Length: 167
Image 1 (cartoon, helix red, strand yellow):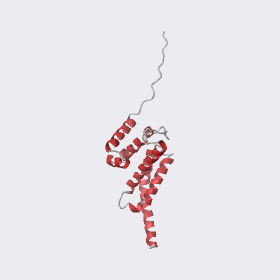
Image 2 (tube, helix red, strand yellow):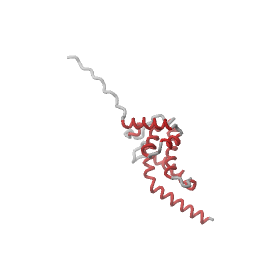
Image 3 (cartoon, rainbow, N blue to C red):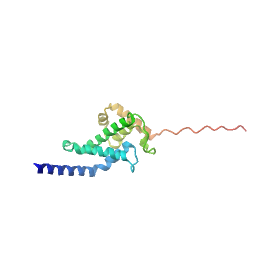
Image 4 (cartoon, rainbow, N blue to C red):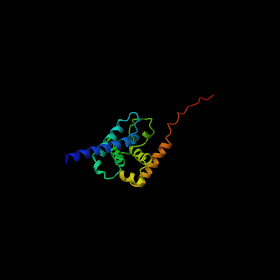
């Protein structure tokens, strides 16, 4: 019996390692987009991914044919949503950007989450809405607003008005 458990543990570890080898890079990029950190300095994204992968590993035997990538991506989204809620008092508020030059830093956490899921990850509106507990129409509106914000950034302040002395 112990031998069987040991061999199952080895098999599980190998399967998980193979999954990590194939998916970790893309999942880290997804987490980095969510946190709007620079790609070379992304401690929040790395922590988010580590916690999500730990959950996937813990539930590996219960996936029963489900895609481990989808499971991990869902964990990323849920953990990001929860962290944004606790750290910044809600998903709709802008927060100080870790990378002010990041285009995604202009978006609220909810806008960023929906945009990344919909456009980068290709998750359907219905799935995104179910994952976030929002109506499909709301996901559609938020995604459109976020896309417009990225495509048409707000202009800077108007130039100061100069007085011309009469001649």
